[in-house]
Image (cartoon, rainbow, N blue to C red; front, side, top):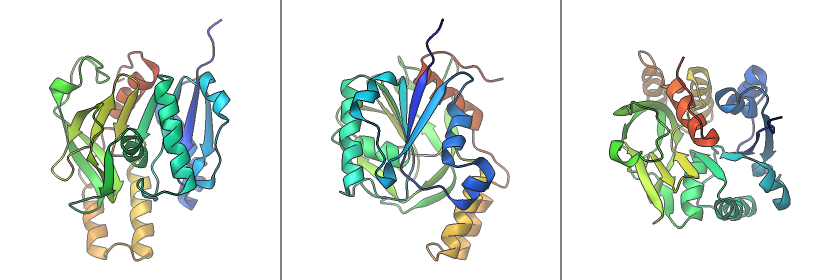
Amino acid sequence: MVDQKKYLLFLATPDSEFAKKTYGGYRNVFVSLLGDEGEQWDSFRVVDGEFPDEKDLEKYDGFVISGSSHDAFQDTDWILKLCDIINILDDMNKKVLGICFGHQLIARAKGGKVGRARKGPELCLGNITIVKEAVTPENYFGEEIPANLRVIKCHQDEVLELPDSAKLLAYSSMYEVEMYSIKDNILCIQGHPEYNRDILFDIIDRVLAGGYIKKDFAETAKETMEKNEADRELWQKICKNFLKGQPYLLV
């Protein structure tokens, strides 16, 4: 009998009303992208101080750190504790996938620098350039490595300096670090592979209503998805190949 695969999601954000109503929460958004039948996916709301016992980390095959509205360079207790856990997981050689805030926090925990995005925030469908020669030998892309990938972006901070141990995998015209890896057990993505058009538009509407962005910025953000979609299936393949160490083919 094959042992059940177990994964843990560190949720660094509360659920929006839209996410709760439409998907039952962000946990389900991640599981729909990354999960397979027969797996166990546990989640801990670290933003609320909810953490697993350190002794239980060993039983998981992989970990995911979500995005957050919080800054990865803050020194709040839960952020510092999550930094400690990142280093523990790395010492255990566990697979860790960092998304947006997770991407930034892992860079910080491993000795890099994170701060406000130098060219300003991004809230749109973005296009990133893959560093083809860097994605091997740990190639999670499959046989054909694309020159570019579309991904939904929603952030105001960025990785300013990569840790010495990191390898740059992608960049864009806005940000020098869009994707990187550390050894074969850490993969980090600044964009949101798990987001779709509806989630992005809900976020745009909420930050506009809150006065955080101007109407023209919101309209421009939505226009980026008028004729294009994120490469969600390819992102799913990349993330699954990384987390699970097996080839996932596009259907």
